[in-house]
Amino acid sequence: MRLLYHVTDSTDPFDNLALEEFLFSRLSGDQVILYLWQNENTVVIGRNQNAWRECRLDVFAAQNGRLVRRLTGGGAMYQDMGNQNFTFFAPAALYDVEKQTEVIRLAVKSFGIETQRSGRNDILADGRKFSGNAYHAAKEKSFHHGTILISSDLGRLSGFLTPSPEKIQSKGVQSVASRVVNLRDLCPELTPQAIRAALLRAFAEVYGEEPQPFDRELFDTGEIARLRERYADDDWRIGRLSRFDYNARRRFSFGELEFDFSVENGRVSKAAVHSDALDAAWVLEMERGLLGAAFTAEALAQAIPAGNGRDETAEFFLREFRG
Image 1 (cartoon, rainbow, N blue to C red):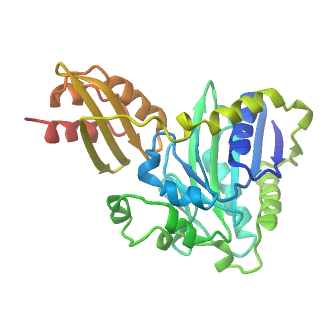
Image 2 (cartoon, rainbow, N blue to C red):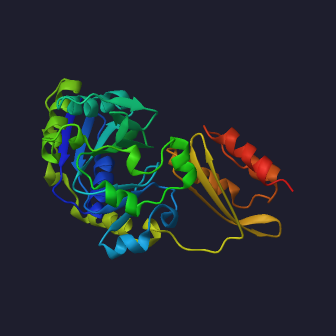
Image 3 (cartoon, helix red, strand yellow):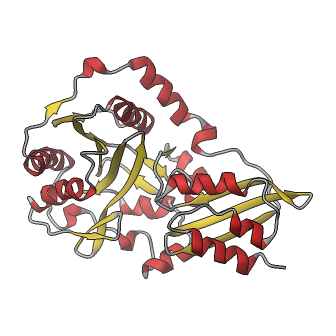
């Protein structure tokens, strides 16, 4: 096993997501890579989310904000220079979410802050979330990325994000900001620079090896530029607007689903499924399966692919779309 790391100076979200995907594509079978990056004045939405639902786009654009869509599932988040992003890349044999999460927790503990995992994708301090995590897998390798709130502007977070009332109620709280905490509130001397150094120390301690910098000469600038262009493209970021005849939206135990359908001759002629569910691939498979299905409760329920959310979603169609 070889431990590698890369810390980028760029705060451009399109650059940073492009480099993340490039590093993932170049990962070899004996490497674990830690990538550290920051985005300035950015809203990042999950792979299958509806940008218009999740963010006040006009308000955000007027304040020079940038909206980007990532490869992973999960929900929307606001990022500024008071937030530190991280990504772990590993082949299947070395990929270990528990171990990777321990790097984050150990780094934060070095500042005297105790943490707890909550569910599959959050890390808490003082009972509130400071780190949200998401995951992506392809071709016998995976990556795990997330955020660490240090001194982020939580007022802007509340001002730009527009989660559904059902999502807020499911968390048992009154607002987005009340669910999260900046680590600097718990340790005033903590800075992004300090957490980066702590993460590299914890990376070495947890894996028992000193990480080496990723060789920048291996960067393919042409490929990274191509990836950046895709992340910056409006069709990827925001999606094409289209008229739909039917809309249904529901929060389930695994996340929210929003369905848009157009129907011709009794069959679904257009289908869009938006979600903050972590399993982005399952949501995309469901969208493909619904296209062309007969517009009946039974046919729609039958089109839901196998996965964690299949039974709940099928039951929803059988209940809501009958008659």
